Amino acid sequence: MKTRELLPPELQAGGITRRDFLKFCSVMAVGMGLPLGAGVKMAEAIANPRRPPVIWLSFQECTGCVESLLRSNHPTIEHLILDLISLDYSETLSAAAGHQAEAAKNKSITENRGKFILVVDGAIPTKDQGIYCKIAGKTALSILQETAPYAAAVVAMGSCASWGGVAAAGSNPTGAKGVPEILNKTKVVSIPGCPPNPYNLLSTLIYYITYNRLPELDEKGRPKFAYSRLIHENCERRPHFDAGRFATQFGDDMHRKGACLYKLGCKGPETYANCPSVLFGETGAGTWPVGIGHPCFGCTEKGVGFAEPLHQMANVKGLTPPVFFGEAFPNKPGISPGIKALAAGSAGMAIGVGGTAMLTGLKRKDDDKGDQDRNDGSKGV
Image 1 (tube, rainbow, N blue to C red):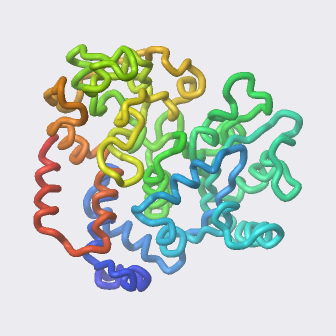
Image 2 (image 1 turned 180 degrees about the vertical axis):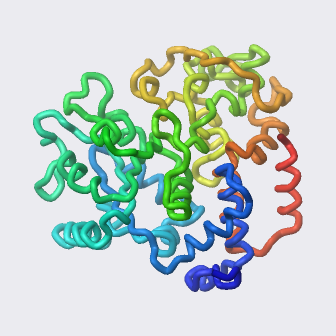
């Protein structure tokens, strides 16, 4: 495919330039640790007129995972489901309902055996043959077992689907389990979080669409580009931890000044995720629990979130120095300039930061000053 042919008509109609499209794909490639040349390959895969079919099953959940995706701006939900993928079934987003929705799902499974991507959110109850969650007269357990064998790839979206989450907490009266535990002979990509960051799902899907294989996963089945580092390592409050400045009560002087929340039960030192650098809501720095003054409760980590007491102090796992030693300002809460540069430039975390910055600019012309700012940020590592 020639470069000039890469831009799909739908993107042209939306005012997106070929240059913007290729730049977005290149940033996504770099964020996953791939060479720059991989960006063109991603562009070719995305521009393919045959959009990859996706079937989204929702089970024992609160719809938070889907709501998180709905609030994604990079890309917007309509661009995702109309231009990038073919969302053939979703209880929340399908236009059809009842028998029509089920017929659409069955048709897609039949016509796309071995080709569709299966995304599951919500835990699967297993006690009493799984009767605690039924859809169209079938249990969630049977629906998953009937659908998964025909999928090209299976993705567990959110903590509930990854390892049971809140549904499996405490006494777990319904016997809720995660997808990997039920499909123990199938390779499952887990994207935990409550809710998970939608960009981690998007990046995983684009990688699979491009290379027809899953990204590199850790021992728990999580994509390494998103879950290879402790939250504590890149937290905006990390300089205060290193300097021994801690909040001991909500609303005390140190809490108001932005000190470390470790003594209030922050689970960042034992939780792996890219929360500090891939933020929710496109509202800038601070849009995550620690940023607004509440300790991380470890929702991406099995055995931590929904398991450990909320304000119990975390087990500091192999304390390592930050990749950048920023200056801590005891009277100035928030992220320091050095850490800002780290968040913008760190390749291991760039999938959200870079993808977010790139996709924000898809519908506007290049701004020389903005380009210079991004270049300056990339030198901060």
